[in-house]
Length: 265
Image 1 (tube, helix red, strand yellow):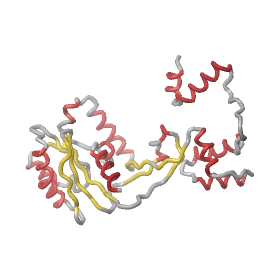
Image 2 (cartoon, rainbow, N blue to C red):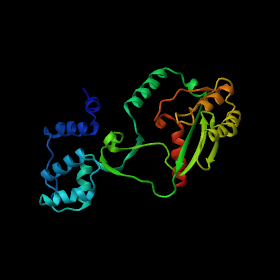
Image 3 (cartoon, rainbow, N blue to C red):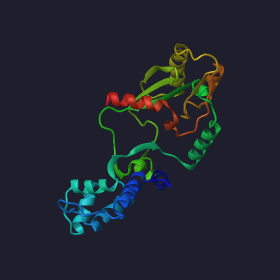
């Protein structure tokens, strides 16, 4: 069995490769003594901070400095950073993900199974839509210690909910391209949402030449699934894609929002 296969099974491809090459060269797997200044953190100290960030990934630099100081070792933040990096860990911003309840998880799984074998041509018929909040200035972020593969581990993420204020935009796009972007002024209710669809969605469909059989996607915001909105969609003979709640990450328009926010940040 090759080291790539072993590494893939263990989730540590690089580490397995290093160990195997070390064994082939010296018939040993332990690290050879390194030249230069000795490490400022003992193996025991390194194990202590590794255990701390593994159990509490949101631990701060200062927490680790203080923990080592209480254990009798005084080091800088840079020394701690270098030690953690040698073990494959670095300080990263927490990923923001939807706050999911068990019912949301089941609905997302059902959606995935229902569309598992859909051909690409079916997705090209979808007109994706969404609202997003644009916040100018600094957004609230939180840093965690993690390995690259662990970015979406729940303990390394920040659960989010819809909007909550700021500048709200409505937009739509499809495989044929992007279309209208509408700035929502004031508090949006069901009547305003239907007006946005009339003035922006339908012209966008015509502009992109979606043709017959196109499908409209929007999420389960109360304004979207209100009886009056459903009736409006029915009268316009629009086919609506069934969508699981709390699933903005499944909507490809999120990639466009990310690009937009990077440019206005």
